[in-house]
Length: 222
Length: 405
Ligand SMILES: Nc1ncnc2c1ncn2[C@@H]1O[C@H](COP(=O)(O)OP(=O)(O)OP(=O)(O)O)[C@@H](O)[C@H]1O
Ligand SMILES: [Mg+2]
Image (cartoon, each protein chain N blue to C red):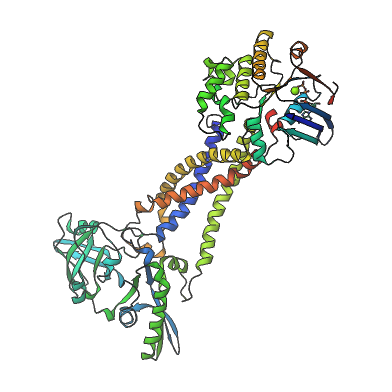
């Protein structure tokens, strides 16, 4: 059973004057444990695709299945549970909460998980260790470099041990050395069984993944 | 979060404090008139008859209750714990060796008065039931009057003269605030020492065993009217009351013997509070909205990692409640201050105008668990009204859109 299945997915943004077709008839199957790269020019709908898979936005048409379950019309509580446990998001521009320090930012998913008996702080320290940031726990996002922010974002995405990681250009803002370190982290997670979908503009990085999906103007071209 | 937008927080705390001040002044002024405040510690189970209606074939008069009517109709009511009678006088009193005649508020009453009210005695004790029954000239006097009369010398056991009779001081009590308008006086003495009960005019106080008995007591008074009236066939007596304190307040100035419309008054009271609550709440909701909009992206992020709409709603309300509560505490303190500064305007009934004593506000009216409970309740209501809708909207935002903000 594929972990993600998209069927005839459309996403159309409508405002008073214009109508933008961000995704058009997207069909996608992702198997458990796959590492998938999504490529395509700017504005072709890559972020939109991740938002729809991660239940941050609803498709205008079509069906999204996670773990074999249709996600349309889910109750808020169930959808929140999917976002909390099944999916971990790494955003294109980090999206850390500026008023919280690194440790608190990383713990956010645990605040909303019903998992009892886990010590949130020690779990957060563990994942920060993993991304190599245990020496910056009390820093605030504005006091960190771009690469460090990206690591915090990764730590936050993996703390609840999701089955799927959705990474939107995780290396886009980084130099190639730091980019490679981040990629190593993602490959490591993938080896441990996590399904990863990653948006990237870097052919070289994409080639290292198992499969590349290409988009153009909202349509899947490969 | 407080440090994030300090100015906004300070303004909304200030706004809340102002609103709470207004509401608490209204609540306090109502409380001061109706709840138990020493020495009137039994207000909640006390009823009053101040007037009666006397109908003859030619006229209808509203007149005070005379001693003979008290004896005939009310003295031995069965349902209440006890019945007491009071008559207020303002008269000159004097003592030997002090050339000054001092005008004083005097209450001529009975020994049941000391059961219904609990005074704190500095020295001595109240006059006794035997004093009352035999008309013995014992008197209780307030501390400040004793000081004036005797120039600060010991007063217990000394005598003063009132209405051409000498009274011996058997007890000295702390001064009573005129806000306790039923117990207040500067001198209390047995009415029987002044004249025969039948010759006096009184206001009647009835202490119920329990406030649940109020309607039963009213019924008994009505029965007495029917039973005792035929004996005096030329006129028909009906009492105005007995009324509880709240009823009395609503009736204020209304001299018919219809029962007051308590429901209407309660509605009016809550309406005033609702308006006082709503106006600032609507204003404050602008601030709440602003605060929430500035956190749209944070809310989106939290939702992206599993926050439910409910948890966002609760979080926003909870954080705003903090502001409301800080405002509430400041408002409560300010309301004390306003109440004290404006007490002459806020709490004075007409009858106080000629009283000699002070209308000090008893501290117990403020420092009760109920007051804190009211403040908390008002804060909660204010919070729900001002940040409820913004919080609800925030919890429903589209995640992808709000994160981008
Ligand atoms: N909220 C929105 N309202 C209207 N149009 C939108 C909205 N979000 C995205 N779009 C449009 O949808 C299209 C796809 O946007 P998307 O963000 O998915 O692009 P992208 O492939 O991630 O681009 P990039 O590589 O620059 O990040 C774009 O044309 C964009 O203008
Ligand atoms: Mg994008």
